[in-house]
Image (cartoon, rainbow over all chains, first blue to last red; front, side, top):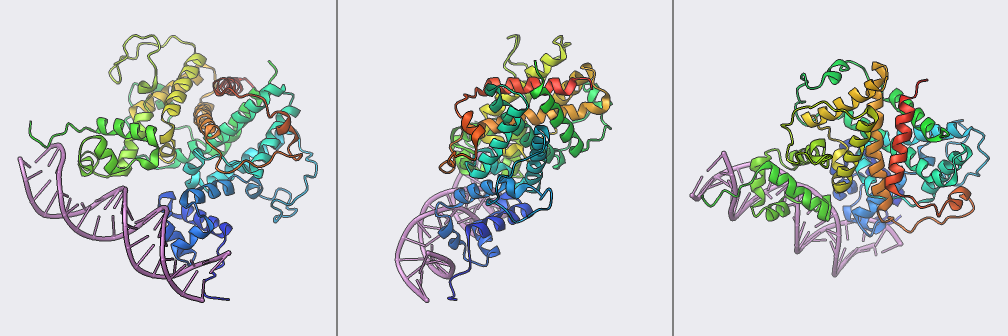
Length: 218
Length: 218
DNA sequence: ACCTGAACACCGTTCAAGT
DNA sequence: ACCTGAACACCGTTCAAGT
């Protein structure tokens, strides 16, 4: 093997980038630092991502948005089948399919919460994303929604999951200043100050409420 | 007036920064460029934000998170009263208060969507934020929710609004690659391909569904 | 094809200095 | 107190060169 083949690949670059993001935050992801982590000169990365950092960001978003990678193997069948599996009719009821998807998606987003800012202005038009949309549409159709309401319901579901993760990440972050003082102007907040919030439970409850509201016949 | 007083203030700096973000995106907000826009040397900004850009970002988040600034004057009473107004008992029913808040908040977020990435890891512990929480808690309490469920319901509402904006911004953005081909694997997506989505209407419908689901007695 | 190394323009921030 | 101007370390990216 000649000296200048470090075995670099888009996949390896993306996963290493994600490790840096998870470890020290998005703003510390530097081409040079990424190069160091890959035991390579920073400029070598441009050979696999000719359009530079922006393209790398796109690849990271697509990586995260792949529900196949997201799903913890639910029935421990074959943990290595990403992309090549046969559809194999899904027997779970529609609401369970949506709930499972939501929990899996939430889990990846939480695991890579440092990459969330990248996901705002980037739309991953991948097969994996399409597969998620198909799951949503099929489930809401099965739930009895009229066709013209299905995309909206799917949008609401996606909005809720994404927003819940952002909400949680924000709640867990340190305040940027000393908190404003809780005085008489905020009686209800004061009264409920000690209610503990379990993010997992709150997420599940909100999800149930949303699904119930979306599929209730009017 | 001596030569070196450019009338700089945190407020002026923040609004100018927001103008740059709205105009050419977050990554083009540069201390030097911000200085130019303010007719000042970049380093002058550090006199008002000694902790640098991170602190400036925090101020921007707090600015955006102020619902008083967000609300379009609903009854055209006094458009200039931010911060000094008397509570003045709110007579709208609880669900209308929540809906109004949601629409106002969504409007600011959409107007400054370029600043969304800043809002993910920063929690604004301001009086304005507290006022919003008070509104949520009071409304859900009035709706009949038991105290231990109120904070969760408020979290779900906040999650939905934030997520809906991100969803919309993403949907309106240009795809980062050529879209994956829509083939036989995605029958429902194909069938519903031509359903038009009106973001305003979808948002309102999802909001109604969520509020109904959250406050339905079980 | 795949990677290196020098170079360039630009960035955030520090610091000493001006008024 | 408020702002300037030079300086430093670091960044993304280009380009010519190596194998």
